[in-house]
Length: 153
Image (cartoon, rainbow, N blue to C red; front, side, top):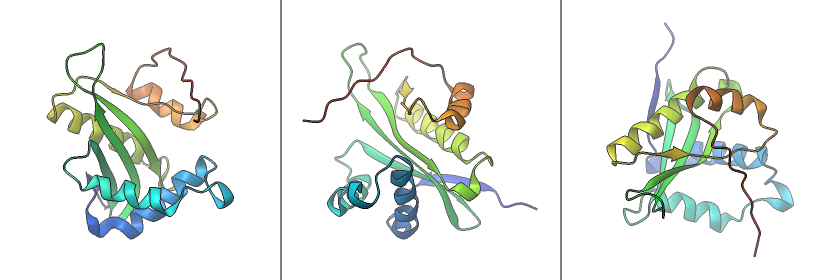
């Protein structure tokens, strides 16, 4: 009988396995070697998950005691709604666990946390070339039609 997939809030004891997933996520987006995030950014990201003042949260997906994926999300205000929005900032599934429902379970976990917090909208973005993820995203959400622009300052 296969082990059940559990989606839960990250705990401080998850750091080592989370770091492995976080590194894989960043490498997927080209942040490795000379372009790696600084250790300070990684350390502060982790610390924020456990600071009740911060609006940043982390879920992990676990099966048989091994972390297989992560989802980071945050709540923020909007000029077009009275209540907050939920931005799903990071979503990653370990390569060996892809196609096993981990990403979908993490997204559903974020939806559940957002509902508990009284949030009525969850949104995220991905690269246009991330076709595999977009097949999943198209099955669990609607494309907004917006194009994201960014400028480093």
